[in-house]
Amino acid sequence: METNIPNRDFTQNACKLCAPLGACLAYKGVKGAIPFLHGSQGCATYIRRYLISHFREPLDIAASNFSEASTIFGGGEALKTGLLNIVRQYSPEMIGVASTCLSETIGEDVPLALRELRISKGITGLPSMPFASTPSYAGTHADGFQAAVLSMVKTIAGADKPESIEQPVVNILPGMLSTADLRHLREISEDFGLKPVILPDYSETLDGGPWAEYQKLPSGGTSVEEIKCMGASVMSVEFGKVSTSGLSAAEYLEKEFHVTARKMERPIGVKATDLFMNELSHASGKPVPEKYEKERARLIDSYVDGHKYVAGKTAAVFGEADMVTAICGFLSEIGITPVIAASGDMSSRFVAAMKEAVSDFDEKDIRIIDSADFRDIEEAVEELSPDILIGSSKGFAMSRKTGVPLLRAGMPIHDRMGGARILQIGYRGTQAFFDSICNTLIENMQEESEIGYTYI
Image 1 (tube, rainbow, N blue to C red):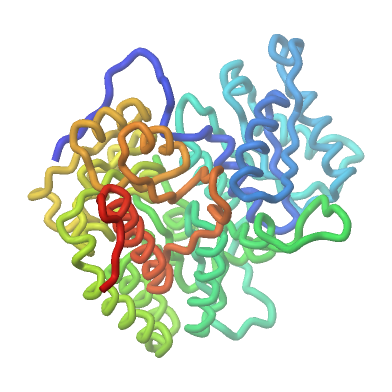
Image 2: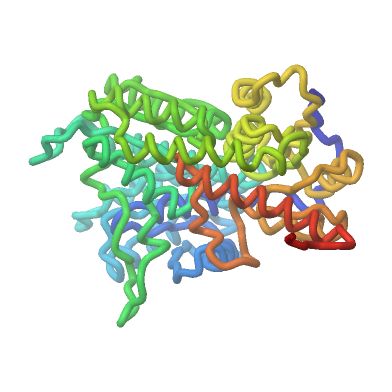
């Protein structure tokens, strides 16, 4: 194993997106919520552009619209005015506030401004307004996402008991999954007889049906009432062990409300999905439903059928550290060595998580690139010549230049349809992922062969 933390004076093409983008995505997973950036209109426009091209859904993100005067004298009044405008125009159930590089650099005290707004005379009935500090120079979109989730839990969660619910309630903190993954999480949990509170859940707000008229606040998402009850759940399951610099949302719920926290890798692969199923079985007191036993059996059968295509192959995986770690663990399970694991994240937990996820980690020669720039990844790919790249559309140029095929995963996926609803988790999602890997390798082999394909 070789850990590579690049020592350079500039970033050419960072393997990350900005931290407020992650916060906005998390806030979009709450029912009746609108994200609000304390910064310039340009930040909101950039994030809208990125998320819309990935999810292909309309997306409103408000901003305090910093001017030159705000930058010099402070934007507290612009923040308050903007929030009141949003309350008047949208009547939201929650406004998720996040800072930007500009407001962080001039030292804006956003929590103070929010408190002042609440105690202002004549202003009542304001919605919940969690705040996440998200300067991009100090984190990635994954950091911003986790900061927003933690902020929502800290601001809203209590130990209220859900009304008229006889099922055991389990908190699921999934991290940055696809909309199809989120829907599958709900299906699995409900098949165990559990009531899941998935935070955030943008499976409908960012992947809904067509509208006859424009909706300012799309339907769907985790309700504020559900978040209020998270402290009374029987358990919290949290995916990912890297992208949290301090206390995670599940750990906060355990500390404050004694809700047992189970942290694990995303359930990609048999081993990781078995662990997730076992946790739900423990929480519900019920065995794994037969339909998942059958899905597991079909998945293992396909491992046997497809082993000749994957055994001995190598891969380069890049993206959010938690996604990279989970995929590398899965690749190790099917016989592919992840020779490069790269992330724009900068976390001391990355290597530790990789050691847990990848079997025989110490025997494999894995190059781990922290705080990665695509220039670093491309240099490693040219040196190590992996058989496949797995990551976002931002790896396309590298794939084209090096000739190594790219299987798209994570975010952003701008150059393919359905990138936001790729199913990867559970036995069913792993099956689709495994098939995609095999077919990508087969297609590349055919393209490189003079014969291409024949069938006797």
